Image (cartoon, rainbow, N blue to C red; front, side, top):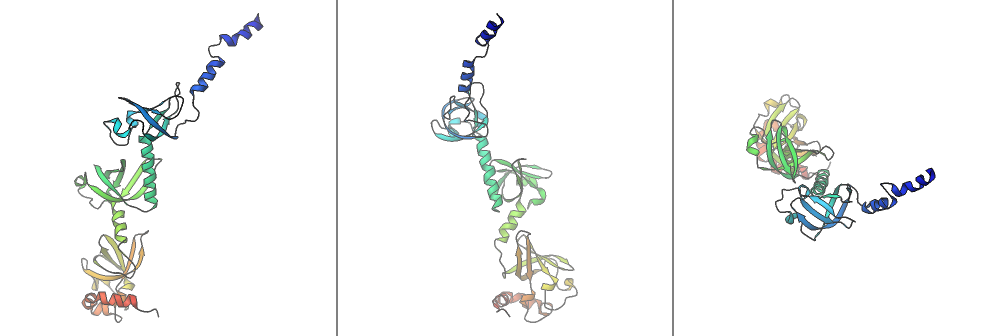
Length: 300
């Protein structure tokens, strides 16, 4: 009796081998969360779209996962019977249906593009969407980025920047923490650097005088004229030679974009030691001819 009841038990069980086989049939092991698949939308409804991805069951794409941008008409971004790529964002349910997203796939692609741009040292256009105490929030290829106040060209009236387009460079980019920190100042510096080259004669305005040299503004880039590069003759005090706001011409002798460093020289413009101190105006007036002569001078 006991052995009979034990033998008959599987037949009376609530979950038979047939059920198990059916469950295996429903579950399609070729589809897993995080996988990119191709498929065709065959039906739209108010809540989303049904997609044929070649599985045993159709897949479902919720309306909010249709696109990174706001969508009113699903057929605009999910045309029927057109093959598209989708990202699986939820594993199969009891019926074997997976959940898809176009939005998450687009976000993934934007991050990849931004990473490439960052690695290539490229700049990107952004639109200012909001303002807070620390800086401004921006729309960058439909993602949210942030520019700290110290990295903006306009730091006083941030409200005036709302809606404006800015060219920015990358300060920090981290996909795991969704961190996109950008800089308008770095982008300006980078574009200014691209216009400069060694031995080029440049004109700028004196912005600072220190014991070791003077700082000169070259269209938003700060260059250093070291005291030893002013003249071939020893100089006791730079304040006796230069004034804040004064315009000077000099030759670029060193460029380091990575460190944001530009070194310039007026020493190379001199015809004799001390000419910068004795005939400053004359050196500046004929700076172009002097620079050409200095850069074309044969090596000694």
